[in-house]
Length: 341
Ligand code: F6P
Image 1 (cartoon, rainbow, N blue to C red):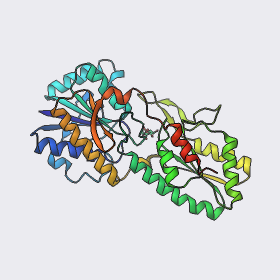
Image 2 (tube, protein in one colour):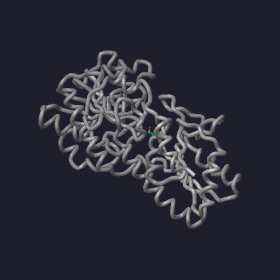
Image 3 (tube, rainbow, N blue to C red):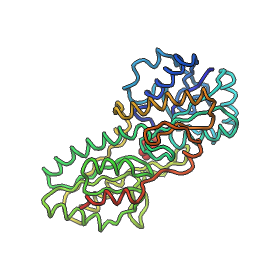
Image 4 (cartoon, helix red, strand yellow):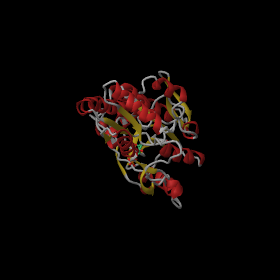
């Protein structure tokens, strides 16, 4: 069998571990051939390929990013896009595709499955916002990076008696902020799922200063004030209709400084959360996803995605993972609230 592999959407540490797991088992246990498609769905759309064999995946386990490249190309929105992919797969003799990606990439995989394509999905995103899987790889590494940053912000905030705000990624889910805020001992965590009351945040800040400590706030890029709007970098949308979130941290720093008279500074972690080597947890999870994804291909489980449930890797319908975003339940936020202020 000849299998195509692609990585789409925002990159994250662990992608290469998935690719390595797929190719190692596929070649050594199933005697499959592989074709690497470059830059997400752009690869199948424009027949952009690279060799993908045992030698191509040697040494990539600890490397961040993706050797295949990625993009936010959406073939479903391109006139004749699906037909172009079908023609290229036939031309290249591809029997099946493994799509590694988040809600957007796997949403395309779902549509192709509905058109009769043989596709298996692997869930990927630092946001951890895919339903049907307890965790996605990339998330643990992003939380580790953000936690280390928050640890560092504590010492400079104490030295200058300042409020330090750490803005983290996560798009419209607050998982990275929730976990890194708790792990880093933030005195306030703001997430998209719970629009915040600025007066309440000011109260947390003042109570920390009253206790002779410096407040640290962990803010998800998609957080927004009650009766307020998302803060975006500009009005542009990507091929899947997403805005570019950024700026809530700086807005909050200005509001707090004006209302409390204390100095406030903001650190926006941005793509540092998406770069570098994956944590051990992400390497193992990604490797297990890769091994089980090629077995799903062997079993011709088209239209499914591998997923982590407890400690088991299971198969779920692709549509289950992409129908609704997995957002932070209020009960989880209430747990964290015990440490606010
Ligand atoms: O979905 C992953 C993610 O990192 C989000 O957390 C973030 O909002 C977005 O991608 C950034 O997209 P880009 O890398 O295209 O700017």
